[in-house]
Length: 374
Ligand code: SF4
Image 1: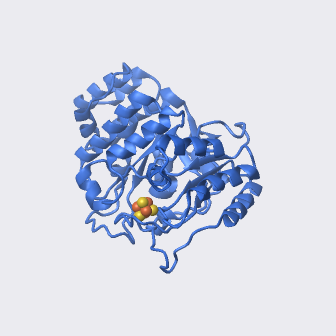
Image 2: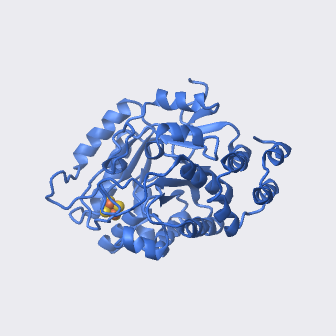
Image 3: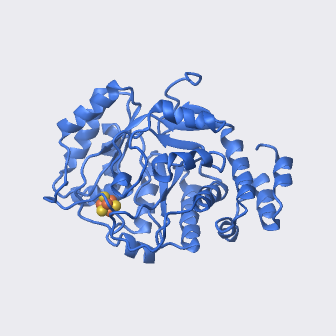
């Protein structure tokens, strides 16, 4: 919906009406309004406001990518309670890919026509700093225009500590080796009390934000994530989104916000929450679209929320559908029921079926294939 008069007609709830008016006049929505958005069950009115913002920014375009997900090791010294993916060295199922393995996997995926490689892994003490830099160089040598999205803020902090190099220097070396953008993982929920339960050894929220600030200063664009549906409250979500919005107003370096529904299976979190409901998911995505007025994109990873919900979310503020993610391992270790390989044709069908125009891009939103192909 692009018409302000139409939006006003659709919203009946007085508090939502006030928020809709703020949105129409491009005024920032405050934290109390965000808490209200996150708890309303007037889902169609909430959706109408989020869709207004979404279409003002992206019209009917819906972005998706064609990439490979490269999880280079699952050995991790942090062993966060929220994580179903990590192992100790020597455990059954523990693995670390050699650079030759990586080259082979990427070459195979390149032959299948990917545009991008998305790389995240555990904090494996056995790997030297050169391993990561050489990984990027060897991937770039396969095809120089492959876009590389690599390593979370948690990994960069680890690389800096392990190598003794200042963070800026770490980033410069990766940029030189071909780094294109940074994923948004490791943000979880910023609140310290919640973090101390779900990921006690992970870097603090302040450090996560500092790593991102440094990356932004060097011209790198990044995502920001938020893990929800574990032990957080609405106040924790408000705090999380507020800190992202504040840093964004300072740096402008976040391109995408990515909410991630927590999958408890195989994790050590005794969450007495059940799976998120459809309304829970919609509230998170739509509220984020309305509150994060300065972040260009909201992404729904279909493998986290399910492809059917992801399709519906395109009408509730989401403009980025995620990517094909060949060989995704992290969320599937935690029990995600979706296929770990969404073919491009299937993603395109889901987007078109929802009434949007699919646009194939890399993680920096550069169009990689002319539209109208499908
Ligand atoms: S969430 Fe990340 S940092 Fe924590 S144990 Fe899993 S791989 Fe390691």
